[in-house]
Length: 68
Image 1: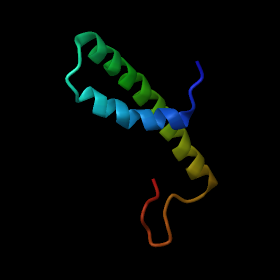
Image 2 (image 1 turned 60 degrees about the vertical axis):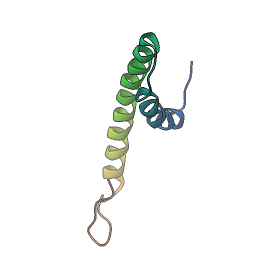
Image 3 (image 1 turned 180 degrees about the vertical axis):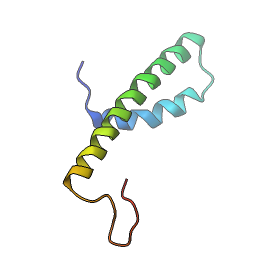
Image 4 (image 1 turned 90 degrees about the vertical axis):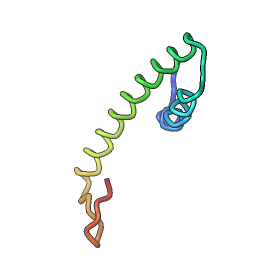
């Protein structure tokens, strides 16, 4: 199954909200596993995004605030 990164980034917040709900044990377990997998993908995406931004240019704006 192919999933776009955009969908994964959108799903992260939705899964967090779903995990707060009172769910059956099996469903809560599946949601927790999904959250773990999605978090790992988002972390990898953010690491690569930061590396790319650093290689292209400065991570500071003109007024000195950090973009990342």
